[in-house]
Length: 42
Length: 530
Image (cartoon, rainbow over all chains, first blue to last red):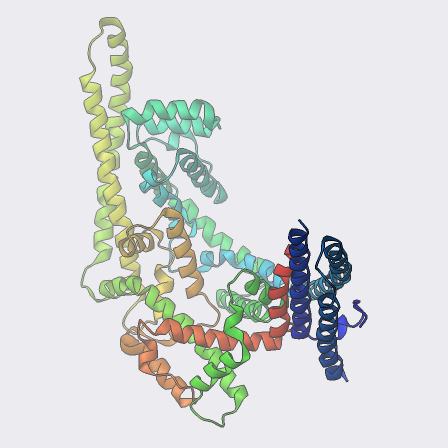
């Protein structure tokens, strides 16, 4: 899937907020993975 | 089509995330090198989602800006400006004297409680009093300030516009220890001055009446009051359904978004409907009327302590006219005595001043003269206070009776500042001066509210059960309110529910929607942080 802003204007308010939450959660997950791998590397 | 788009988009996003998680999960992490590769892959994927996040924020900002772009209806400022011309309506009210029209009573009241204010404010107050006389064509001079040598000394500096930080403060320091009641002296002196020039001031106001009618482009006082009510009503209608004002009220938490969730509002509506099948337009029209009546009723309860005091006066058997005349005679006697003593005191002061310098004699006689003057002024303070009370009571007896409406009762006394302020202080002993003025302002706004029907029609004879009168009226129109809803512990809840229905309706009439507002409030915090 192409993750760009092209389809965002078609979403309703609730959908846009949900997309934001899901994206933010995954970014937190990735941050967590990066930190964990840093610790394990040491 | 749109439904397909949004279902597909979120599920596509979730699928993509699942794929990316899968990609990461199969990467080995068993050694440093592999961990390094894993971390790099995480960063690579994170970059894509960070950019996507920026796009989401950009879209949120776009929508927030669109919602926030509603401008206030220009009609609102126009009407506010037009209404300011009607500030002078009190000058058309013949139930009050020139003293109330000058609004001198409000300024003089501040001197009575001088200890509640600071010196700068009191000096500003003196200047405001001087300006009020100037506004009605009376330019005061030092000769008008004849109550005591201290009044004269202090006013001489004020009239010559000395700087407060310099001579005035020093003069005050010198005067205060000799005359701690200096502000009471000044207050009574201003009252004396008003009566000295009363005929000229009355003439000014009778001339100004025609100018005001011309200015307002109306032919009579009645027309002026009618126009004022219509303008106020129209202004309120515009404000109620204005998009930017509605949004502002949610932004500053005047309204709580949680109160306007559709299911919650529907619950309240169903609670207030007496019939299942009811014409909803008629229902809402009656709910708006109920909102106005509840506003009136609640305010009536808030100010009932004033109403009750006036009812007592209407029903007592005192002859306030003759009491007023007696007060007036007493004041004239005391002032005549005061001016005689002042003359003697001034002579003695010059005389003793010289003897003291030459022979170092004590000046006990001077101090006794001073004490006499002070005592007379304190007596005058009481007489003037009684005069004000008896004047108002006399007007109450003249214009009000048991067939008068609540509006007529409140309206008559609303400009007698002393009475209202004293009543408020009695009811709220810890109240500060600023809040007294605020409360009086709110009281006047309530009396003159354009939607008042209850107080304009309910007479003193009918004031026994106003709650029942309201309840019965709305039961007739299928609104389910009970007498219990109007009890002290329940009325705020009823008012709140009715307000929610009305505000919800106003939102529907506007160009902004509940969803717009909810989105705005939720996402504003997000974009501000991001």
